[in-house]
Length: 423
Image (cartoon, rainbow, N blue to C red; front, side, top):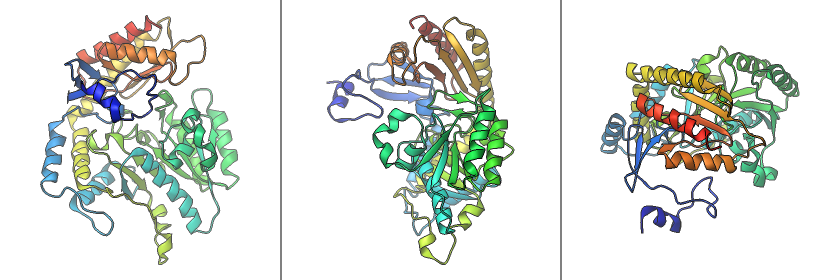
């Protein structure tokens, strides 16, 4: 029995209807932008394994940092203790985060980072004796699968079974081109009610919605509206953070900075689960009190895990090397060249590029569901041809490791061109 067959006996995979799913390739090795399965077949990881692996698989620099930490201090509880790597990582983050971010809260995944931000916004107001119990979010947003993050997410089939159990979130239009004024007006009307603790958003790119993009200028206006009406802003940079948009953070494109930021995925270079929620001093001060009950009672066993912190420190150093920054620009330029070539294809409706993110919308006669027939057909075609891409409905996107070679990128582009001939 091979690994794929053994896997089916006990493993329950995410986002999978196992009754209709095919056998999964069993990956046994990875190096740089490539993965190999148990049969020796090679795949180009064109989505950086769900956007976490920008510096390549089996990166020896991160691996060495992890090994060194494991043989020094693998873990110590962060409740009541601290350690050098958590201190160093917080100091490193202060160098690259927007200057209004002053406090770091560690956790272990993107959903939890969002959960902490939402809880903090609600409790801050509670601590002050202010009743603000609602949150604003974009339509079609995705912020994670825990309850607060689910509530803020707008992709309905992910949350349909739980909608009666979720915190109240009001959704506003995404301010895409031509939709900016409507979105601004809806937001302004909502914040004036004084019911809302926070506005959460994916800055500039809605990932799970199909890499839907909008401009920094309109987001600046939205943050200003929230600031004027005492509504906290939460930038969910779980996907966009650490170079994806061409800058270290998507919020680096903004004049107005968010009150909170959520980070995960590429934080540790795809090695160890870790997440961070960052805060302004003002928010932290809303919990700083002689009354113990006003503390933020949230924590995880592996909060600020030293090994994860060591991986994050190595990853951030890698991001800011000249080589990695050049790679980001190289991938961006290659995407722009491919966009020019493909945008007038008869089966292509729209294209968009930001940083290392490329997205293409396939023309369809009818609305295509998130996991619909076209998506499945495209996904299987890509896997058969040794390219890992996960279309979202009729949206094909590329978000590769920064170290992907030009030849590998050209194969990805050619495989997408070939796929358009089968839809």
